[in-house]
Image (tube, rainbow, N blue to C red; front, top):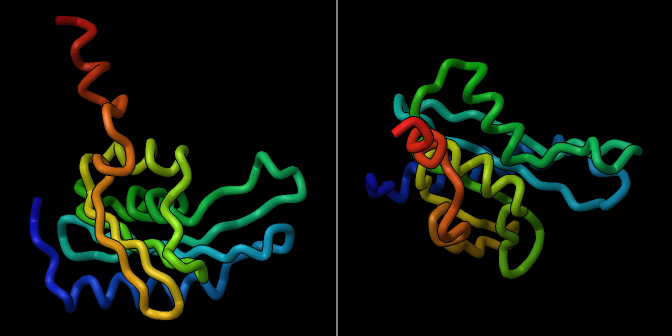
Length: 139
């Protein structure tokens, strides 16, 4: 796992914090911003978008993954998630599983007061189901 520089971490957190301001969260009033770093150094953004039919709401992390994939990113390195909570909030279970699809990303959890927690997808989702399980089917 590549060690992220403080500069890269700061860029990701800043980008996630800015896109958080665009969240559409009229029901929960819980805005979330996410920024994903790809293997080429690109940053892809996502914010949560709620829907009156609650189950159709989409989290910031999954929007950022979709933006990275749509942009052609092949490798995802890290994700920053910014919320207003203290301590910073970690991704929901569905987002953890979607992030796991792309490997053991570094995860930066941050809040508006400058609090940060560094972790990994593997720490957030131990013993995860991943693409390698499906690859073993035919063996």
